[in-house]
Structure formats: structure tokens, C-alpha cells
Image (cartoon, rainbow, N blue to C red; front, side, top):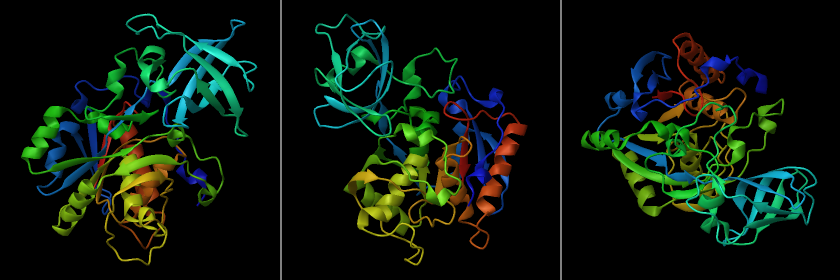
Length: 371
């Protein structure tokens, strides 16, 4: 399929610059993927569309203070964006670096973040130790960075959010636990502790997996044919206890409801690639056991993919030409196996309806429940 098929025009005023308050006051579009019918609700009413015995699975990864600022000995300003640690100590990282003449051997002194409680006791420096073909840098810090992130870093927001000045904790889910992401799993931003308690009382289970979201998650697909796109690799983990509850839920007739596309990738990998199976082999049995794993995930879900683990999806409205939009199109399209383009058409029609009635898009925007 052509990447251009997943393009759409979004006027800037539809990009949410502020989150809904409280979190569960965001709007909720409920899309029936079989019929294409749409209901407009508020997120706190999501329990009306879930059943006792369903199991919500969410990504508990926490966004780290990945944006650092500093200066060279000449006074030149430098910005360092952490992408992923290259060693267990947190001293060496792969980074996106902005500044002049940042060649191998260049050294940067990091500035304390303005919210740091006190000046740093020991200056923290960063040295460029490698330059990759892509332009990314390998950076070695003078001290283990995990211990100093809150002192020198800030939680990054996506570049399309330009007017938010509130607490960066609002860009974390209320159940975030395991630090490692450079962008939030935003479908989970709508949940409040009170809503989760209410859903449990309704008989809906809740469990978490971990996938550390990389910067490339939100990048548009640049190749002409989507099959030629090479998805980035992220680290994920699904415990044996959660895998057991997922399998028990499915066997007992409950639905697995994924909170966000990062959770989808984790669950579908656990049902395929983590077990040595080809995710794109649609001849396998219609239900595939979910297995525990910890390791790399690089599953590119696009139209034609057959979902093994996920029965319903909570997600936000995604960027044009993105792999996330293709994943959601594939999920909608699974209900229309005889028409490989049905999912894309139904989803983009839903997006057009969302714009018509004033939904807010992207990370701080409104939500969809696709059943």
C-alpha cells in the first residue's frame, strides 16, 4: 500500500495544546469496527462499553527527563536528547545532539535544570565518543546519569505541543512506574485512579506491561510503499503473571483491551515473535497463546496483519502518515477480511467526523475506543 493513502489534512487548531482537566473529562469516540458506527461520549463513561471479565492492559513506562541543555568551553549552547542507554550504568547513551562542531571528542558541561532543588554538587559533563552514520551521537557522561536526571534534565513534550506551561507530571500516566520512555504512552493519560477503581468494581481487570517508547514512534513513514518501512526497535517486558492472566481471560471469554498502540505491539509480539513465530504468517491458529518475554520489539503492524492477542483498543488520534495510524487501520480492518482497504477508509472517515464535531488530536487530545 502507498504511504500517501494514510495522509490527511489536519488544521493546526485541532492539535491539543492543553490536556483535559480532570484527565477523564476528555471526549471519547466509540467506533464499532464491524459496522463503522460511531458514538460520542466522555472518557469517564468508558465502563459502559466494557464488560465484567474484560482485562485492560496498559503500558506502565514512565517518561524520563530526556532533554538536557549545556554549553561548550567556547560558550556555544548544546541540546542533548537522550534516546536509549548503551550500558547498564547509564553513563553511555545514544543521543540526538544539537549544536555546532559536536565531533568525536567534543565535551559539554551540562546546565542544572531550573526546577532542580539546589545547584549540582559536582559538575556533570558529556563527551561525544562516537558519531553514527544517521547523525546520532554516542555520548559518555562523567557520572551515571540515572542518578542526576532530575537535576539536569526535563521531561520532553512532542514538538507539536508549543503552548503548554503546566506541570510535566501531567504528561505521565497515573500508573507510570518504570522509567525509560522519551515520549508518553498517551492513550493512558485519560485514566484517573478513581476511574480505575470504578472499572475494577465493574469487574474489569487491569494489568500492565512495559514498553519504553522511542522518539521514532511518532515519526512519519518516509518511504513510498509502507511494506518497505523499517520500524524502530524498542525494549519491552511482559511478566509471566500477566501472561497467565491474559491467557485465562481469553479462555474464559473475556476481551483483552489494549490501552494504546505501544501495548498492542507488546502483546502481539508476545503472541508471535517472542515465541519464534512469524508475525506475518496468517496461516497459524486463530488464537495464539501469549508468552512472557523481556527484550527487543520491532513489530510493524500494518493492514493485512492478523491480531492474535488484542480484542479492543483504546487510542488517541494519530499523526498523518505515521506507523501508528497504520496499526489502528489494521485493527479496524481485521473485521473486514475481504476488503484490505476497509480499515483505512473507516478510520479516516472517523477522523473526519472527529474534526467535524471538534475533537482534539494527538498526545493531549481526545480518545477512541475501538471495539
